[in-house]
Image (cartoon, rainbow, N blue to C red; front, side):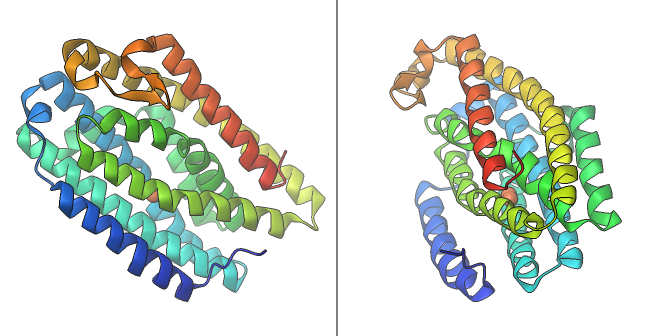
Length: 285
Ligand SMILES: [Fe+2]
Ligand SMILES: [Fe+2]
């Protein structure tokens, strides 16, 4: 059954139904920062840095998907790039507002956390995405953004949601909301890449090589961030054990009972497994 990527379906199912539902849940939780985040400096720092990383990713996704509307080769692809642009604008705004709240509570500028978290290899990867999107290749832009950057980030959302649920349920809900949209973005990325390359094996081999190179570069970048954030959460969990008493790292596994190295290894294994599945769906394996 082909995926329906029409704008009218997106308005009915996403903007009108899904987003309205998510906004109700967020209003129910309330946007005030939890006391524990305000009062614990190490927790406040990991909170700001994680939000800053979301802001960096969402801004890149927004700028690339917006540029891809200029390049979309089919009406189907054009319609989807437009929807993704709105999805990413919403994610960018949600995380940016939460970062502004968190930064204000610590009397810091938002840009402090963004500058601290943006490591040079990620800056280079994002610049590469902008060059490809500005230079005119829809399919290559789609591969780098939807299959590599988002495709590899996608498995992390479930972990992020579980880490934040006991500390900042509002942020956990923002992550869940973005995850729902990202699931569509990676599914579309795989679908459009497979369709556009189905009759061109030479181009498919070229795009598969781009995907492999991008996966290698982003694999190293994610490895840095996963180690940093799992380490920061580990330090916070040791400082405030009561907060993590019932918190799960994975279904049925408590954070408090999963050693640092095992958390890192399990997260990296989820990325490898789910990304390999996505690449196969796109016909690039
Ligand atoms: Fe997004
Ligand atoms: Fe996305």
